[in-house]
Length: 202
Image 1 (cartoon, rainbow, N blue to C red):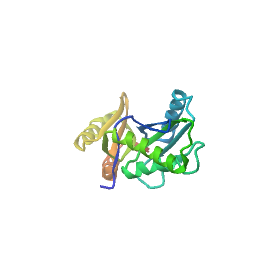
Image 2 (tube, rainbow, N blue to C red):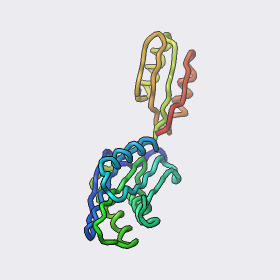
Image 3 (cartoon, one colour):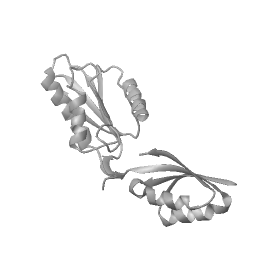
Image 4 (spheres, rainbow, N blue to C red):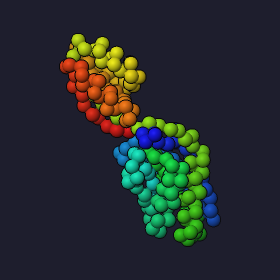
């Protein structure tokens, strides 16, 4: 279905060595650019003595939410082969950072492309690849008197409650599979005294 995508379950690593240079690929799932920037900062701190921190990442299910970076390596010799592996494994909501320790011998552009590709492939081969559904997140605010109507509707449709505060006024955050969103929203809107706010799509 169009709202299903493949990503990795958790962080994995791959290592490739060539002529004294060491390439450490770190792959991890992400849901936003901000999340990626935080991880990049942490990895640069951890591998602060490395010569390069090259990367590629892809977000969402469209083809245009991606970025690559050669971090000082010759143009398209690092970021592009890393991204090529993301495409080859048909993954999204994923980032891969490859840390390079220079071994004193230049590898040439062809050698670099091969090294960054192989390190990335090793990290992805070590990963558990999973399928996820694209979902929309909403916040519902409602009067206490319609709480049972709301709860019954969510239960009947197997809607996941992400967060809830139930006092005089109820506030619930829910996750709805993208392909089911229109139907669920229509049902919620039929209940009086309910305010619905879209939060994000992941």
